[in-house]
Length: 341
Image 1: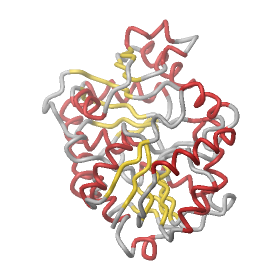
Image 2: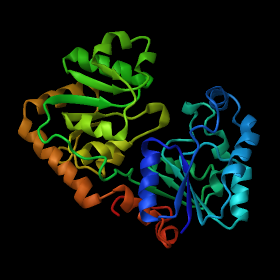
Image 3: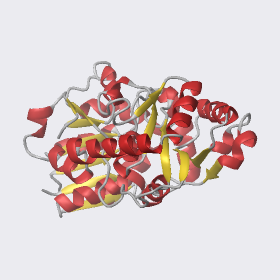
Image 4: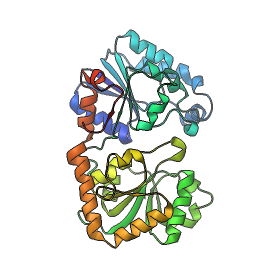
């Protein structure tokens, strides 16, 4: 099968491409990182995506010279009516891997073009079950919801006996600055790794000594997480998240996940056996403090969580994409939430 993978040549998009390439050698990458300049993308993102339809059409016309059996779009926002129409006319299939939430306004106008054509894909792949509540409004008939994959050789443990205590690894959102300020104020030392934290005008100066302000690659993330006994997981409120990549990656790497409570994750990892959940900041503080005084409990829960992900659920990248790309996948799994592959 000839596949054209369209997405960014970085992050989870790049990991997904490499996984699919191992399954189907004739897979090619069409990177969209530099489709627009920084100024153009700012206009695209904040104001008028349709202003760049001509440039988008010209980009794909120049880049796509062959016939492919499948066009696999990974969280790509540069997809318009013209592109989908031409793919359909070539009798090729088109899949859209939706790793974000294109249905809400958090990302300004980023997903405006996608929302107009998302119902035209042969398959839409969601990573969160709560995205399914939008399928009727946007007339999406063929979709599936899966667990976010981890990637073998990338999300691995580097330190058998971590020396550091608590980590949060993620991008800043408005509610997170207050959360960690209050948590640290209660007395829990947390190391924060990620980007955009300097945007928090109220709390950044108060907690910046705990922040490592940088974009980290997947291999770096695994090494960092491996150094910590507990990894805190939060969800982006204005993105309507109740699950994240980190929900799988932290236990896959072998650290204990202390997550904001969500029904979706509770169905995957059993409370106090494979994961720890909290409801409030004070609850998070109490549970992390208790765990840090009970290292044997941390070890027991983290090992059970890791076993659940690696040996039972097994949402490993190559395994996941091999299933998705199989001939009978849509017929067998369409409209299902797949936990165990």
